[in-house]
Image 1 (cartoon, rainbow, N blue to C red):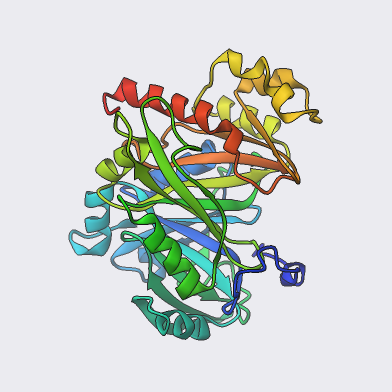
Image 2 (image 1 turned 90 degrees about the vertical axis):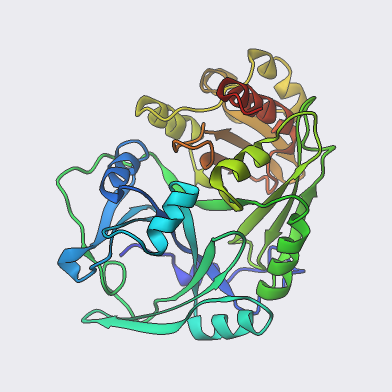
Length: 380
């Protein structure tokens, strides 16, 4: 099984204010509860270039749910659907539609991670348990976070199977090529009115994170809508969680729209990193992925704002890729339209050329693009 090289993670602290008492080695996987896992897997393979990895279902002894595991470089997704009426998964899908249930974090010691976080006030989701098969053992534990989202701690140092016990290799004939996605750069949570600080304090107190950057309604606003955001990060910088809340505006913000249709707080988007955003976005567009677009005028003075870049501006303009710069370098980014029936979750594609920020210079153009989509849906 492809996995992160642990030796490469022994890095100086990227965020020295974080305590890093767990510590977190990276994102192990992200699990989505979906209405039809088989069809969802086909979408993420065909449109996004994910590769089939593992399967759990009736054939492996799972009587109540079916799961397909997909992988692209260091990104792993689990798509899970219920096979019987009632129960937690059906309730989650009925309330939220398809969406992220679990952000699973790779740790050295899942039992210690559980003990450290619960003693600091985290609500238990799963007490430590060890599952085994002929390939070894994996220890799992879990805690609740915002909304119905949870964090699963995954300890897999004693396992050399395809994914984890309870799964078998999934090796279908159909394997579309990947699109160059590398790892999860960050994952953004939307929370309700005046809840941002509560959840930022949760990550600081319970998980040892520290605030990396914050944006207020002066930074993230248009003529109609606004939001507030703070970015929380663990010590080695491998895990970054921006937390958004609505702010007062003349009309309904994208955060309010999300909360209304998701029926509460949840994961708004995953930012997936690439080393060649032009090639990745061109491939995704050819496979049917739809992206937000900004006016052509954005590109008239963008290089005056961000300075010299390595890329030719024309393909960036043609694809609608945004550019921003900070003290460390620049970044290239683009955002999809919602990828689900409800206007909830979307995906960001990002390429960092030294920059460690999140595209503050693009906020106004981006949120105006989102507002145009909201207006077409009648939800602005």
